[in-house]
Length: 116
Figure 1 (spheres, rainbow, N blue to C red):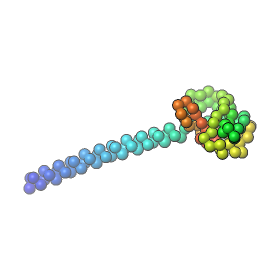
Figure 2 (figure 1 turned 60 degrees about the vertical axis):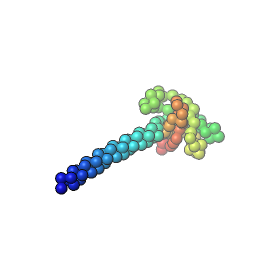
Figure 3 (figure 1 turned 90 degrees about the horizontal axis):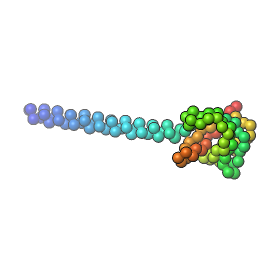
């Protein structure tokens, strides 16, 4: 009888330890996945369109400061991930946009929308 109780207690203890380790692994995986999503979301900006070059996939913007990148307000050419996002965009329009890091230090516009 004591042997059965000892075996049952051991199995229960091992199950609890394994469950705890699995739960911790799932938490770590979930946390890392969420970090990746945060990075992928990019950096939001607001500005006005100066020029659009659909063929080259570029837009020249004068934008407000982008605090998440520690960028001051400036005028710059930016590439877009998808040239079709520039269709219908015209000089003088106010826009909001999302920047993502394509490679170290190189940011591109992943989304751009006209402010109405």
